Structure formats: structure tokens, C-alpha cells
Length: 305
Image 1 (spheres, rainbow, N blue to C red):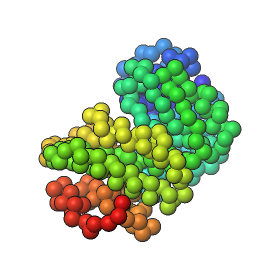
Image 2: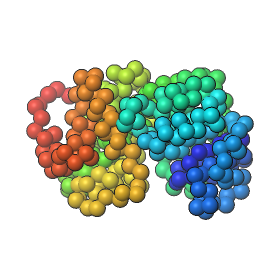
Image 3: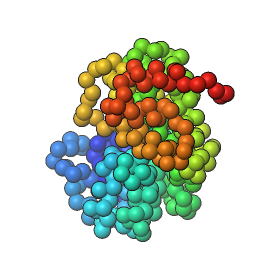
């Protein structure tokens, strides 16, 4: 049995994909009555006790809500295999999801499921490849077999830090790309932001102990390409609205906003030069307008690539 916590778009899509692959799935929602989903094989519940005995519990919650949820529900979750499906850095602890899991549930086996994926594609049964990162090789093999579905292909990776950072930081670059397109700066500017932004992602990941190859895979490069180039990306659309001076959708979860603040703080602590990330932190906190920030980037001293 597979447990899924969070009945938002991504959690629901994963639950449906697993059920269509023949797995028994229990989907937990804060308010089950508000969820309209009747997929055979998926049981909807508001009681975490119904997840007892699950081979894995996928945590499909916004990153900034994960720490509080784990602290409140640790008694139910400790000792289980907990797979984080959120992409970001906790703004208060400056940590990724597996560190939060380890702190709240020390007997749990933490893992991360990340990579280039949109909930709508998964729900439609379109092919999607993801990274499953877990430091425990044995647990990773079990999880890979359990969570593979007809339209979901999972690749194992022991580099949890790299997988987390790839998924988190690409959201920051996606906002920057959306802002550039929204400002009318063109596709060449987007390509430049993606390239130099990817260099920043690699720089921070290496400083925190990640393997360089991880960022070149699905959870880094692959996810960045998808998120920076598609209108389906909430982070890209957020940047597009910023660049155009349009109204921001305050109801949408845009993980890159908080991640920009957190990543900029970590970079400053480590003495790393991450100008695009710093720019996004300033823009999203209201300290700098989009036009001024992009002009500041272009005015930086010339340097070797």
C-alpha cells in the first residue's frame, strides 16, 4: 500500500498514477469532503492512522508547510518511509525536506522524489521520468519498485542533497526567466539566465556537498529546462507576471519565492557569488523592481566564463 499526504494537484496525480499501476493507494487530505476524486484504487481519508502499514508515505505538501506538519504529526509518521515530493528550502531552518524529516521523525527513512514533471501530464498518463533519492541503497531499491508505474520511470540516486537542491533552485531560475520574458527581453536573455543560473545551482550544491553529476540529471538540468520554458510552471508564470507588472496569483503555491530568500541567505553565509539568486530575493521581497534588478545584472563587471 502507498500513502499520499496532500490532495493537491501533484499528490492527486501521483495517487491516480499508482492506482492505475495496480497499487492500493490511500490519499490523505486535510478536508476530504472538499476533494472530488473517484479513481478506483484510491481511498480518500482525513485520518493519518489509515496510512499505517504503508510501504511508503509520499509527502506532497508545500515546502513551507512541511516542517509544521511533521512536527504536528510525528507520532503518526515516525518509523515509516517518508518520501518528500516538495521542492524548496525551508525559509526558517534553511534546510531541505529530508533534514526536516530527520529532525521531526528520527526513526523514519527519508527520501526525495523529484524531477521534471507536471501534475497534469502525470494525471493524463503521459510518460514522466523522475529521480528517487535516498541515502539507504536497500530502501531505495524497494521504493523504486514500489513507486514505479506504467507512466512513471524512476531512477535511483544516493545523493539526496544534490537532488533536493536541483529541484529547489531551478524554481528560482524559472522566476527569473519568466521575468525576463515578461519584460520583453527575448529568448536569448532566457537562455543566458538558464545557463548562468545553472552555474549558480552547481556552485551552491557543490559547496553543500552534492555530487556534480546529480545536477546534470533529471533533478537538476532536466527539471530546470522544463520549469523555465513552460507556461504550466507556476514559478515561470509568477516571473512572467512580475515582468509584465501584472497581478500576482496569491492563491498559487510558488515555491521559488521563499527558496530565493533561503538560498540567498545560505549563499551569503558561505561567501558564494550568486547574483541571479540574490536578484530574485530582492525582487520577490519587494526591495527592488524587476527593471532595476535586470539592469544591475547586465552592469556587472566582465569576467571569464
